[in-house]
Image 1 (tube, rainbow, N blue to C red):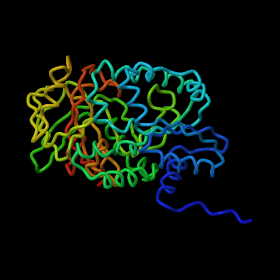
Image 2: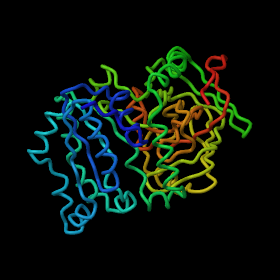
Image 3: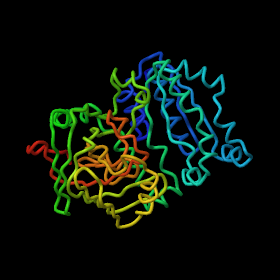
Image 4: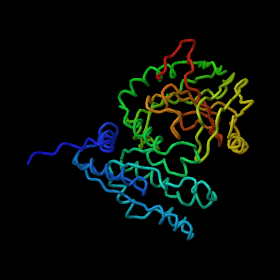
Length: 367
């Protein structure tokens, strides 16, 4: 009997792209796929395609209603435990695929901090076990779209999902090629100048720190770091920790800031002598103001710079910084990228379509 050709429907093409291009799945490898009701269709297709590649997938399923029933019954601490049989499975996993859950992030974010923290007490242990297992994996933003979150963001659920599908399928080798000259300039440069006709005119400093290119494929170096064995998809950015003492001028955002379950628009950050002296928004600025009050030392210092590379994204929730040509400037924490800022704040403004110079030389950005 002739061998059937692989499916060519959009869902299968996406799964094939993730498993082949991003995760480089090999025959015989053990694959664990997380699933919730809203992501189960994706998980099923991923499992089917993994088997076509002669790998061994299992789907780890959690029911949304059962989860919240446990929470309402006072079981948040129980959900935060690390069951031995689940951890044994994790220890034998070669490739892990995570999709965000629970789906109702609005409800999750409304929980008291003490209770919500209990839900995720397993987190550090998960990463410790994953590192020992040497697994590699992907965190799929396809788990984010959910009806009440789309409503909170003011976006169309289907359009949001489609943007993520198209953005996820961008070739990681193409992203890496685009990232290379940008990363080189950020590594060797000293001063950044960003300008845009909307009033953006900002000078920032670089301190010789290594830029991090997120292109959707893990390197050997990534797998050695505590929290980098999962690549995020869609991908497409170059990030670097800024010199915390250098920032003068203004950045005016023309992209939405998407928080956990709310938005802010038209951010305008003004810096003088390395310090944020003004932060205003067209809407949603109360979130920034509340976080800034609790930000601690370093909250008014420049934090990170990110350059977006992905041509299939446009003001897409939670990956707005990965849109091709988007420039993100943050204030606050940057230690995750090798910086010195320990603030309890990460706030940002994104401008797309701006001119970008390093040490007086214009650096072409993707669009």
